[in-house]
Length: 108
Ligand code: 5GP
Ligand code: ZN
Image 1 (cartoon, rainbow, N blue to C red):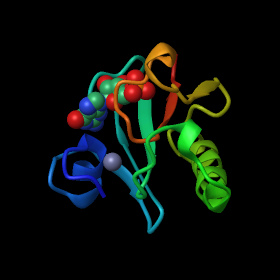
Image 2: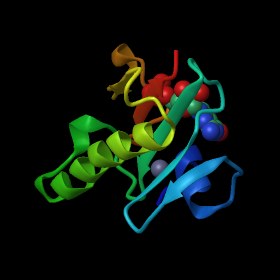
Image 3: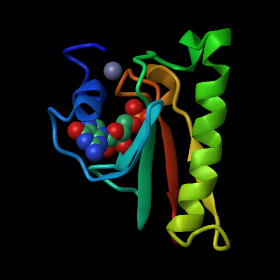
Image 4: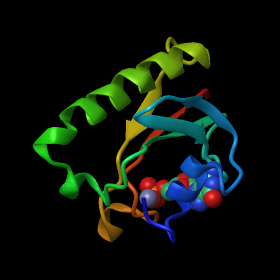
């Protein structure tokens, strides 16, 4: 856990967010500036900077996040209409929060 990391603060409950799912490995909450009717962020509890920093031992975490994106899309009613699952990696890839997260975007 990093004290200055916004997503670590949300995970610890120190910063408010609209949490839609939480378990021992990940938290999912609504993006504060949504780009679509449904825009969720799926975030591992473990502070990992970006996809570049994933290790072999994190395989279960990333797999769980993908399955959770699929399940949340279904719960939000956007499975059939379609959605995007995005990982922005480092500055050139559009990453601005350096705690690994997956965007679930859809509902158009
Ligand atoms: P990135 O560009 O790093 O992949 O995406 C970061 C996302 O986090 C952005 O879509 C941004 O709107 C969202 N975000 C940044 N700060 C906060 C916050 O404090 N709360 C919430 N819920 N979302 C945030
Ligand atoms: Zn963090």
